[in-house]
Image (cartoon, rainbow, N blue to C red; front, side):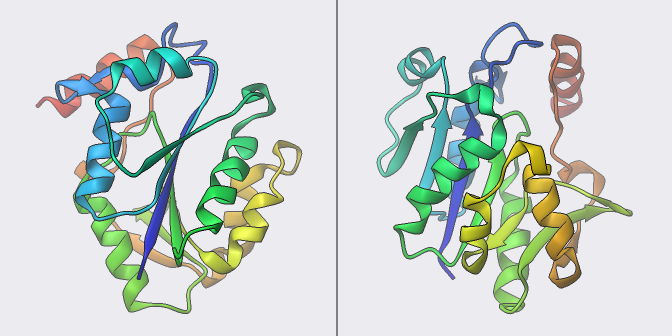
Length: 200
């Protein structure tokens, strides 16, 4: 089943003090790590939504054939606006599902393939969600019949979280072990802790 991905990388990184996309991770910029991971999993198309740091980020990346970079001129409108921009691009493809990735949650190919395999085995589910113990994790895999729902998201209505809550009863929950939980960081201290844990 054809799988697309949207990487959300338009945030201002105000608490980090520098673009999260360019933070070193596994000896390369974090956004490059995310792209390489998704390409390893044969995901196509991949849409990256960038914000005010677009020029600096693109100049730091190698060329990725087939990856489309979309500019969000209004990143202050929140993550929902970036999702809309990405979904409009994905909707023009033959994809049957999309994985929505936060740039600041480094992924593993093992986790992505778990989600895709679970989705392929359960084609009638609306969502495929990773779960650790009783907590839903990231990234969500969302079926194409919900693309219109994604383009109507707003931050005022709790955005993607609200959509997941609405359709969670039809979701496939994929249990993941602790090492596969994507870390998340907003501050330099959180980043350093996540990087140290990753390097163990």
